[in-house]
Amino acid sequence: MKKLFHASFAYMLVGVASGLFYREFTKLNEFPEGEFTQLGLAHTHLLTLGFIVLLIVLALEKVFDISASRKLFNWFFGLYNAGVVLTAGMLMVHGSLTVLGEESNKMIAGIAGLGHMLITAGMIVFFLALRRAVLRHSEAREPAPVH
Image (cartoon, rainbow, N blue to C red; front, side, top):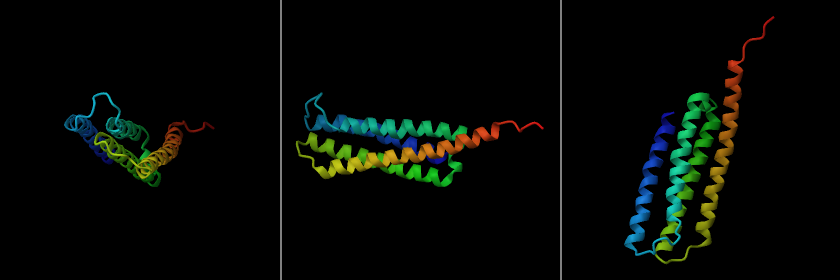
């Protein structure tokens, strides 16, 4: 549970910092206010997928002990976090290039796509671990048969 708490807290800090970077970087480079850049998406991805989702996972962990399926939980945690970091990183790169008036390329889009695939794989593994934990939890709460 500590790992989930620390990761969620780290995403909160990085998410807020990325919002500050977005605001200041666009001002510094006189980027037109209201014009789209993916820097704003990095901010929301980090806060939503990192901070909020991991807080929800932390609550589910408290109730169902999802990490008892250690192997599945570790796969989820690794895949999911790699995906969020990769996706947010590419959003920052792409958004910064837009603000600087530079062209992005297909490699950046491809790496961002890989990040989304890792997030998806992580969520699938999470639901496998959650299912196992919910079934284990419900079996433990069922009353013993009466003879």
